[in-house]
Length: 177
Image (cartoon, rainbow, N blue to C red; front, side, top):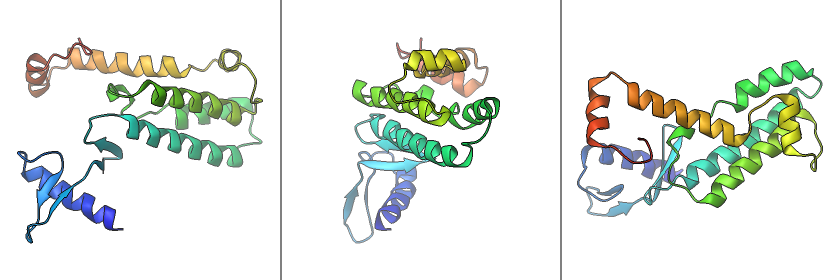
């Protein structure tokens, strides 16, 4: 409960004080707090500017969704399961913004994606992931990540909003060009 209070207090102070280090603030009694992780709009932001915590959050959510959906829809037909899978598993909000992460964290996400597909559709643990994806005509984790990044790059380059254009012209990272 106290962590949520710290986080909410940090949001309010962070919004108005931009010169302080990452999420540090001084309260009325002079006590300084510093948070290394906060949750903002459903995503986890870290002081190290790594996406590992957010990817780990998505892995936990994917396992939870799989367990819930396997129990509720185990007797459905393949077409119904495919529609449910595309609705619940193909919407990775913010996946195109993940640029700074450890390779092992991304491998855990890919392993989780493969394991969830196998479990949801009733395949055995040791079945080939490539064969499963080919049979179900589903995209692999690499394809999903590539598609989201490509769409983000296209929107970034072709956006007509004046604010986005100014930011795009001033800040040209090599990974988005």
